[in-house]
Image (cartoon, rainbow, N blue to C red; front, side, top):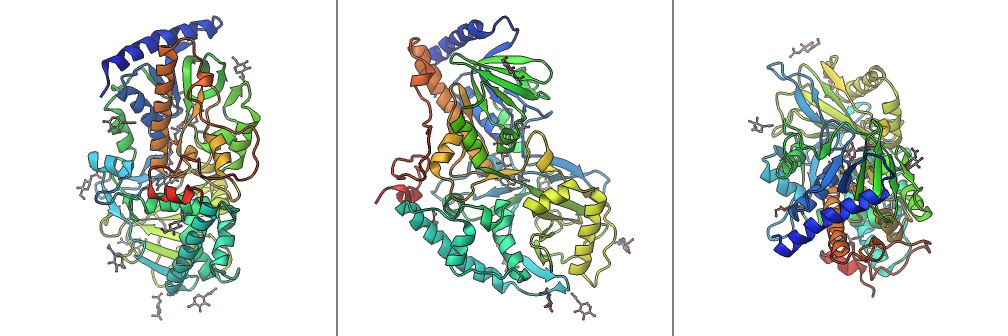
Amino acid sequence: MVSKQWLAAALAVQSCAAAVSKARDDGEMCKKTTVAILGGGMAGVAAAQALSNASMHDFVIIEYQDQLGGRVHHTDFGKKPNGDPYTVELGANWIQGLGSPGGPENPVWTFSKKWGLNNTYSNYSSILTYNETGYTDYSSILDEYEDKYNTAAEQAGIILKENYQDMTVRSGLSLAGWKPKRDDMTAQAVEWWEWDWEDAYSPEQCSLVFGTAGSNLTFNQFSDENNYVWDQRGYSRIITSEASTFLTKDDPRVHLNTRVTNISYTDSGVTIHSSDGSCVSAAYAIVTFSLGVLQSDAVTFAPALPDWKQTAIAKFSMGTYTKIFLQFNETFWPHDTQYFLYASPTTRGYYPVWQSLSAPGFIPESNIIFVTVVADQAYRVERQSDEQTKTEVLAVLREMFPNATVPEPTAFMYPRWSTSPWAYGSYSNWPAATTLEMHENFRANVGRVWFAGEATSAQYFGFLHGAWFEGQNAGEQILGLLRDECANIMSTADDCGDLRHYEKLYGSSPLADYTVFDGWEVSSFYSSS
Ligand SMILES: Cc1cc2nc3c(=O)[nH]c(=O)nc-3n(C[C@H](O)[C@H](O)[C@H](O)COP(=O)(O)OP(=O)(O)OC[C@H]3O[C@@H](n4cnc5c(N)ncnc54)[C@H](O)[C@@H]3O)c2cc1C
Ligand SMILES: *[C@@H]1O[C@H](CO)[C@@H](O)[C@H](O)[C@H]1NC(C)=O
Ligand SMILES: *[C@@H]1O[C@H](CO)[C@@H](O)[C@H](O)[C@H]1NC(C)=O
Ligand SMILES: *[C@@H]1O[C@H](CO)[C@@H](O)[C@H](O)[C@H]1NC(C)=O
Ligand SMILES: *[C@@H]1O[C@H](CO)[C@@H](O)[C@H](O)[C@H]1NC(C)=O
Ligand SMILES: *[C@@H]1O[C@H](CO)[C@@H](O)[C@H](O)[C@H]1NC(C)=O
Ligand SMILES: *[C@@H]1O[C@H](CO)[C@@H](O)[C@H](O)[C@H]1NC(C)=O
Ligand SMILES: *[C@@H]1O[C@H](CO)[C@@H](O)[C@H](O)[C@H]1NC(C)=O
Ligand SMILES: *[C@@H]1O[C@H](CO)[C@@H](O)[C@H](O)[C@H]1NC(C)=O
């Protein structure tokens, strides 16, 4: 509940912000606001809701696309029996970790129940294994990997607790006894399904400590279930529905189809310029652009971001996860199975994981199947034409199902995440030997410019719920600053509420005082011994 006192403070904030804008705008006619939220994905909407919840209504959301939702993004695809198109998700697709009785619940799961989103349990045991000769059962290797992975995750817990040196997931798996030969393509396919498919990078490219901790924090905390969203209104419905609880239809505070090009900031405020020549001046800005957008220099900062910030942006990595959709005139693959794993005889990660939307509980009459590629294979596929990719995937299907007649698909499409100018990739990843201090620098504000999104979450990077928590947090931090600033007009933002950052990095440091993992029992791993 909002107290009367806080309402008064919020009103004071608005006049205080107006004064700030007037002082800095050099005669330029910019729209004035207190908080400019840059990007209308999950993090941006959460930030705006946090402000609204505290009766702080003086904000704008500036969004590149023609809709809210960001990387939760669907498209029309193929045809239903009645001729209408189906909806398929090009971006986020699962609710990852639901909730356990009496335990904490993933907010995305809460929203999906609240807004009646159609979704189905993803059964990772409903899988058949293939190679270039067709069906061949190597499912026992899945269990073997899982045993070794659990050992590696336990070791990672010790490294974390004792503050030992991090290593790659490859090293961790190897020490746990998982040592697939480079030419053992079935083991390579299993490893891809177990690791690369989730992280969008190979075990060589990932941090053992933060990769396994991240998985723990989602799947041990909420639940180990992943539910696949197939709602025909699109997964983004939960974001637009939440937004509709505090934004009006055509809310003038939401600037769609607006590409931010330049963010200039001073001690007293932030001015945001967009490609259409419009500008907004604000007391604070929250940048929710993806790590890929930040790394691409698609948006310039004036002055340039400090070295510690630029270094942090460069240190994390942006993965690409590309789903290639096919619709056929019939389901020629097994009807009751959700997943089909293909081991290419020559190339690791070559069209490995196939998912059937025709499976029971999904959209049985759809005859839709899709295959996912990541990293180098995703960059390659995204560079080439639809026709070239279609030829390759049909050849793989014909190897997997030698006794079926594999016809031409009736519909075919896939997105190009690696080059989409509003995302430049799919979701972030934590490279090996990248410390929490480095991540704190990535997350920290630079004066009045705040950063929030999937990638700023140390616990839930890569996940939609990470974006939610981070947007909420940035909104709340700024509310705190506004309250202090306007309660005591003499104070400046510099000395209240800044997130910690490090001008210089000295490798790892004791984990005892990190608060980012607080609130869950895993925090015991982070207290010094
Ligand atoms: C292929 C794929 C699969 C995924 N699968 C899952 C999954 O199954 N489960 C899961 O939990 N998560 C998944 N994710 C991750 C999830 O989608 C993200 O974590 C989440 O949507 C990120 O939200 P965000 O608000 O941080 O960023 P975004 O959604 O990227 O929001 C930022 C917004 O900024 C806008 N923007 C960018 N540049 C500019 C500019 N210059 N000017 C104005 N606006 C700009 C963008 O259009 C965007 O709307 C997946 C993502 C992808 C791409
Ligand atoms: C806003 O308040 C509602 C109702 O209490 C709550 O469900 C929601 O999570 C809050 N949003 C944020 C971003 O804190
Ligand atoms: C998952 O699939 C396996 C293999 O088909 C099956 O034995 C199991 O019962 C399924 N689990 C659920 C929860 O449906
Ligand atoms: C992950 O969870 C397992 C099982 O609870 C635990 O043994 C391990 O220490 C955890 N590892 C990390 C890095 O959090
Ligand atoms: C949700 O699922 C039900 C039951 O299968 C179906 O009748 C309905 O059309 C679905 N709605 C959407 C929006 O996907
Ligand atoms: C960004 O804006 C600042 C302040 O208006 C200006 O000095 C700078 O030249 C701009 N940079 C770009 C790349 O437009
Ligand atoms: C594919 O599986 C078949 C049947 O099990 C086997 O004979 C063949 O050697 C396998 N191919 C490779 C590259 O391992
Ligand atoms: C394909 O048909 C042949 C001949 O009938 C049979 O021997 C083989 O097992 C079948 N292969 C598959 C993958 O069903
Ligand atoms: C699908 O198309 C193929 C190739 O044209 C054809 O052989 C097959 O009979 C069709 N299946 C159905 C169910 O119409």
